[in-house]
Image (cartoon, rainbow over all chains, first blue to last red; front, side):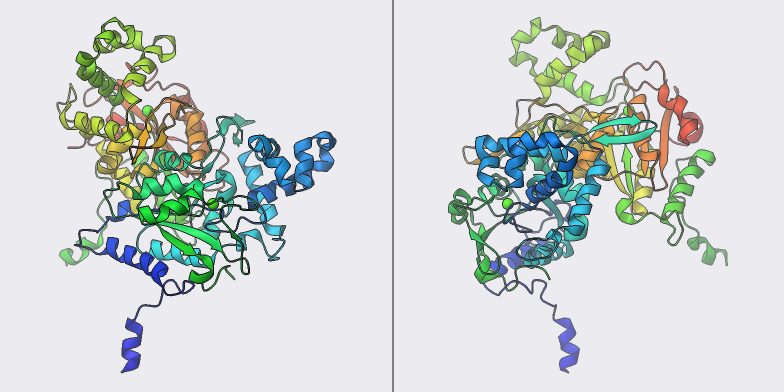
Length: 316
Length: 316
Ligand SMILES: [Ca+2]
Ligand SMILES: [Ca+2]
């Protein structure tokens, strides 16, 4: 009667996670908050899970992908802008000179962002991102950036949604940039993406409704900006938070400390130079992880050891 | 066999709407976009409907309810603030002197907002709104403000959701204020509310995650701010928009003009002094309606004649 019993065993919803305490902590939490009648039960409306993006859902090396997009845009637009040949920020970009770009509180980076992420209609911007995603390849993995995502995290997103969680992105990256790919790549609709952004403006232009991207009143969705962004966009405290750097610490604290509901915090520790990258205190680009890693045991945050806990890293 | 046939007839989802072209325009639109295989079919993910709040979902007279809340807060806190006896804005509030409050680009109103809507934790603010909702009564209808909502609009929200629309509030009112009541009153969760807001700040205070309300970088979700707010929070164009004043015109334009999807726009015209209030060009408080009403025929927006189209006005 084996064939009668087999279908009753649920398939493993997290096949890319190796068995162990890390995987078990996720499953235990989900079982706990979804068990009706238990004291830990959380109503569906409050099952909010928030995910950092760069280094948590997809890779952030050799540079955050949005920075690579900006560099590609600069190269593409350069022939129309001879004045950029005398622009230090633009030149640093073309040479991928990270030190020059991030010096002086990211002055060069912000200058290039202004040239590539503002002053056009939101539709025109979206099309530029789509065009880039359709043609650009990751230098190491030789495939589109939208495929350089972590298979275990894709499974985790689906597992949480199957248990009636609402999954959100809460990233320091650009709100508009991520929205172009969030639905297809992560199953996360645009209205569940929170990110850094300037205030877009609206006007009727020759009878056509037109939204224009600006860098006015920029909101930086990083560090303390993450819980502030969650409050602004969601207005409800998450019960699960996933990140990979000190920039996620405030979001993890907001989610897990003094929360009247059961809560879950997780940090992805990049320990796998062979299959992905290995970094924490001294990352090559973004993703510095020192204080959040130190605070993890105190607050009961689960730390993913990528090399040990992930059976697969990149989605195929 | 009548009893066998009767249950097969769908119950009217909009019983508080009188039969006629207004009601029919809603039903026709919903049928059109939900009919699979038709050229007008809109996928579920794109069925976004946006609603103004004051004067569209609930009454805005004798003053917008949030203003009445602010006045109540001033009265409640006055004993602790003897300095307010010399404050002109506070005194105008106590006397319900609308002219004085709205003079000079709402200077007095904003001053009182700063005293009643900022400088406290978000939890403390929410509790204040809850306390007020639990005790205050509308001066005319003698019932809680959260019950001074339009029954036809409650039915419309439910009807749209039953057809897999996601319903959003897009109001000039305060984001945090509306969120306290949106879920229970309208079935709209906090993450589907867009409103005016200052940027909240986050910090760990004596080990406790704390969000504080401020009036920094205030976003005014009115007029052109409505489509800008929709872009910021939703990132997707609505296919249906409902409002009652010129402040909703940009949102109606954004929703219905040059939209590749079929779309629907509706204006609630307050024509019923007996059961509610009658106003348009010269409202007693908020809700001025001139240009949007003029533009309605051009853009095919349905205009609700409250007196004629609504069988019931207030929810019981
Ligand atoms: Ca990150
Ligand atoms: Ca209104």
